[in-house]
Structure formats: C-alpha cells, structure tokens
Amino acid sequence: MEKSEIIEILRSGDVQSLSRQANLIRETACGRKVYFRGLIEFSNYCVRDCLYCGLRRSNRKLKRYRLTVEEIMACCRAIAESGIKTVVLQSGDDFGYQQAQLIDLINQIKTAYPDMAITLSLGERDREDYRLFREAGADRYLLKHETIQHSLYQEFHPGQSLRYRLRILFYLKELGYQVGTGIIVGLPSQTLEDLAEDLLFLQGFKPDMIGIGPFIPQKDTPLGRNPSPSLELVLKCLGLIRILTRDAHLPATTAVATLGGLEAQRKACEAGCNVIMINFTPPSHHQDYRVYDDKFRVDLRSAMEVVSAAGMIPSLERGDSLQLKEMDSAKGNI
Ligand code: 5AD
Image 1 (cartoon, rainbow, N blue to C red):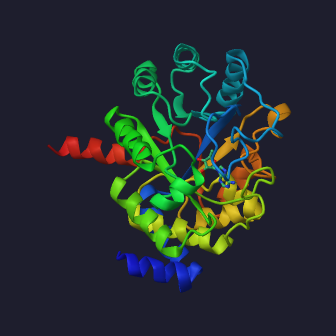
Image 2 (cartoon, protein in one colour; image 1 turned 90 degrees about the horizontal axis):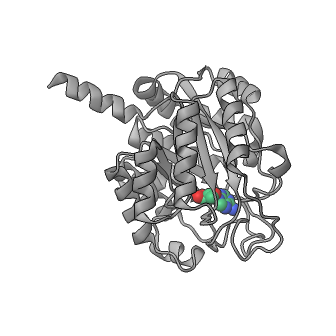
C-alpha cells in the first residue's frame, strides 16, 4: 500500500468495510483465537519524563510503589491458576530493580512455571541487561517506539532519542526475543501523514507484536488538557496494520478499552486484533499505575465475553509469535 492510499483511508475511508477486510485477513493469517496475557504492573517508578505519561518523573502527585519479588510471584501464581500462559512484567524505566534482581525473578518464574512465557516491558535498559534477561529465559520484549516522526519524538520525550530506541528494537530481535513495538495515536499535532509513516515503518520492521492505542490525557502531565482521538481513527489504524502486517499479534489495547469500554474492545477485535491483556496487578495499586486517567481494568471473564461477541475463540494457549511458526514450517520445507 502506498503512503497516499493509507492517508486517504485514515482521512475518509469507511471504517466498517476496512474492518471487514482486516477481519478476513486475520482469519486467514492468524485463525480465530484471541490470546490472553496476564499483566503485572510491578513498579511505577520511572526515570523518563515523557510529556504524555502520568508515570513521568516530574509527576510529584503520583504515589510511587514497587512490588517485592514475593508479591510479583503471588501475581504469577494467580495468572497460572487462571490458565493463562504468558506473564507480562511491566514497569516504568525503573533502575531500582537491578539486573541481578530481575534475572533472579525471571529464574524464579521459569522454575515455578516452566510452561509460562515471560514478556518484559521495562523500557530502555543497558544492552547487557537485555542479553542476560534473554539468557535467563525471557521470551518476549515490548518497547513501543511511540512515534516514528523525529520532531514529535523529540518534543514528547525530553532527553531521549528515537534512533537509539530503534537500535534497541533491532538488538532485541538479534537476541532472539519476540519483539513488540507500537505507537500512540492522536498525540497533539500528530498528522495523518505521521500515522501513515508509523504504519509503514511497522510493516517494514515486522514486529511479532504491535501495540496501538489512543492518546488519553493524564491531568497531572503537560498534555493533560489535550483531547483523545476518535475511536474510529484508532480502529482504522488497527485495521490497516492488520492488512499491512497480516500475522502480527495485535492486542485490543487497554487504552482502547479506556476510550470506549468493552464495546470498543470488541470493535477492535472485529478490526483485526487477536490479543487481550488481563490485569493481574494487585487492586491496592490500580490507582497508582496511572499512565493516563481512568485506566480500564480488563478481567478475564469480561474479556472472554468480548471475544465471543466478536465471533472469535478465547484461547489460553501460549500464543507465541505466528512468525516463528512460519519460520519453523519454512525450515521443515528445506
Ligand atoms: N495515552 C496513551 N498511552 C500512553 N502511554 C503512556 N502515556 C499514555 C497516554 N497518556 C503508553 C505509552 C508507553 C506506555 C508506558 O504507555 O505508549 O509505551
């Protein structure tokens, strides 16, 4: 697809016919299953200062917390008991958790639950950390590039560099992680052309997983008075990325649910999504992981209803990258 065609669809395309097309491709390339991931938001400390994010270090209003390894293991147990086979360990860019402690945590999870896939979402760390975490058994890594537009990236991420972030993404691939990246839709002054460039970048990079969520204001940040985009625009981005990448794992994100509730999440599934994150953070900290305001908490039961309502099949399988399957069968053919 040409950039001009993508922009035209984003501007004036029909979201329903795009969703139908994307849904068909999802059916052929990924099947009917929607995979669940168990999310543990284990620390809201962050050294970065991203203008849109409530965890930014300048936000003094946020009560900071860091779960202990024991508390994290208790969350893992709840995930295992639910039948889910992926743990997503997510935090701000928090160096309070050191390399050795995280390696120990990964080891403990792999020992207690050998069949559990571990996804890390810890932001930017030293190269050596990524290598050792992978060696310890981490399977996947999520690191959104947020926006591929240099000037926007500079504006919203003081002290960070888009080029460096992209280098990390390539390195994660090299290390053999299943890699997830993605974008925020509707950042202030982001244009449809910017979004089209993001979608084309994602098509070229071929991530195993792609997180696409709307900007949602958090009132204690500099962007707290800016509006969210329309659900329609987000659904179009989801549909387009399904068509462009075919078999990437595509979550119906929590941000989508925050924008429009379970109905929006169902529409996201109908627009090509095939993954849902279930929140296993202890309820006492729900209020504190305030990336944006009124963050929706998705539980397994309502997520299963969403999936069935979308005509798809809830799955508790590991749901590894579909691109790996492709590679395996390609090897088989040699
Ligand atoms: N709106 C939407 N997504 C946000 N994130 C952070 N702040 C916001 C916001 N206001 C997302 C970013 C980041 C992750 C921590 O949360 O994509 O990768």
